[in-house]
Figure: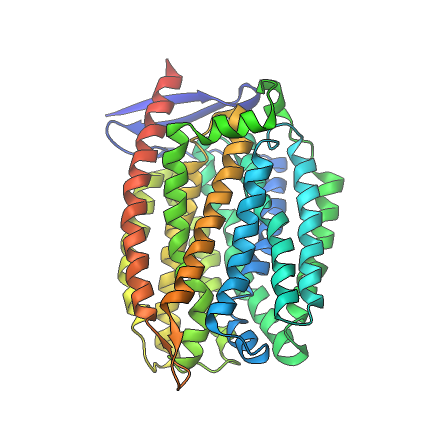
Amino acid sequence: MKKENQLVGNGGAVLTGSVGVGGDVGAVAGQAAFTRYQTFIIVVISLLQFTVILDFMVMAPLGAQLIRILKISPSQFGWVVSVYAFSAGISGILAAGFADRFDRKKMLLFFYTGFIVGTLLCGMATGYYFLLGARMVTGLFGGVLFSTNMAIVADLFALEKRGRVMGFVQMAFAVSQVAGIPVGLFFANNYGWHMPFLMIVGLCVPVGIVIWRWMKPVTQHLVERKEQRPLAHLVRTASQGRYLRAFAATALLSTGGFLMMPYSSTFLVHNVGIDEKVLPIVFMVAGFVGLFTGPLIGKLSDRIGKFRMFLAGSVLATLMVPAFTYLSITPLWEVLILNTLLYTAVFSRMIPSQALLSAVPDAKDRGAFMSINSSVQQLGGGIASVVGGWIIAQNAAGLLVHYDLLGWVTIGAFFGSALLMYAVNSYVISKTAAAKH
């Protein structure tokens, strides 16, 4: 037995979806097509996300190289990764009070310009502390971009379409591995570690021009906004219990990736025996598979339910994490299979959870909610990265030790996030049902 629900969104658009009694939100029998402009928005947001994700992702495969060239410890490299997360988290909180006061297109262009400047500084860094400061600047601006993108998605797409939208947007994650990371590592291996950042700047500029020239203003949220001070808007949004559950879920969702990912390339090179020049193949194969699994996971999230898809991904991730973290010297073909399955599990959690979380805030709070949520994600990830640096170490032979322990901490976070996502899903079901009456 199913109840057909309608939720009136921005501009009076009707968001339809079906919710089984005691079931999951977002499971629909039919899936409407995107308009031409919606398709354009998906492409633009995906390209922007590609450049932002690439800027972050390139740090992981460069880890082994930076540790060697800059003569830093794994813990110091963890700070290079986490300082981005901390500054992104701080800027997201500071921007939250203003996020619903301006045209989202203008917000996007402002922070994207700052992100480009920060990435350029990374490409000019002359040492460890310069790089640390450059990553801080990049994080200050880059951290707000994801939340602004997600607010735009929630403004322009009905709930029953958001799984598919997130599936396409998360393809940026896969493309960054198929093309971006291997190309970045090629430039790093042949022209120095600065070159990948300069390459990213070269990709960002035309994307910014396209957004400035052809993207329409996103201002419908201003119609519903009540005039209030930025600080009051921030406090009101951050203090609501229904939002706090979502923020807690996001904090645990980000923990897993930040615990393991920053050290994965170092682990694969030193513990698993993968040559640095072969390392791009490992990321490329996982990313190539993600080009197909990302949209598929998005469609399944909308069809069978976002929470069910998230649980399926969590089960797969729980199986794959120890299989990966307990590796020793392993043939390349086996590493390719395990790493690809692990990244598929990441997609299967990331896509439905982001789509489900987008349904939590009211339209008037959407920008502030997304900014705070992004900040929580970055801060939680930054803390996890630092904790990961405390847990692991390199022995005299150069091997990473206690990487398996990171895996078990990650699995603990999986269980915690599943419980919180259940509460989030229950709230969205009740909210969607109430909107019908």
